[in-house]
Image (cartoon, rainbow, N blue to C red; front, side, top):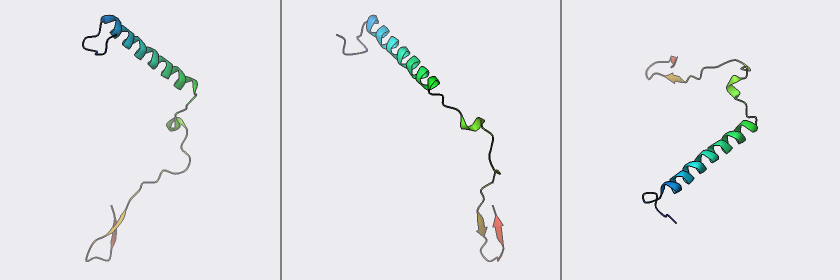
Length: 66
């Protein structure tokens, strides 16, 4: 049995690559079958509001929005 990837045989490398491909395919199938939908493709509900902060400049009674 090979315990190091450096000294591993080509057969061991093939098994590792095959296992990685199988795990990737299984993951893609599970995600595809779960029916997850993207939320950014749905229509926007309500107005879009820009977040701003109000700051007061020292020595002035005026408030500015930045």
